[in-house]
Length: 91
Image (cartoon, rainbow, N blue to C red; front, side, top):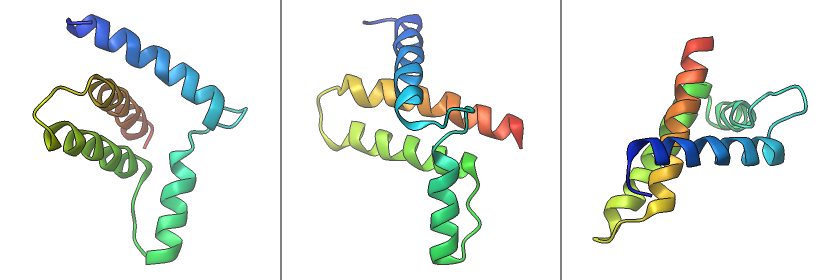
């Protein structure tokens, strides 16, 4: 895997796999539950898009933590960018 299309294709595969594991049967993403819980505990006002941005930042932080390339973090970051775009587009 070395080109942008390959990363997009793998991210698409992961979205499908993880969606089957974590999303509800009606297609609701799990992130809305996470930000709802966070907001209840902290009184915050995170949105679903904010939650995906946070996860994208976590993956980027992991990527830059060590000098070697971490392919899984890169692919996850691509997937989180797509989920963030989906959430922001639906808002």
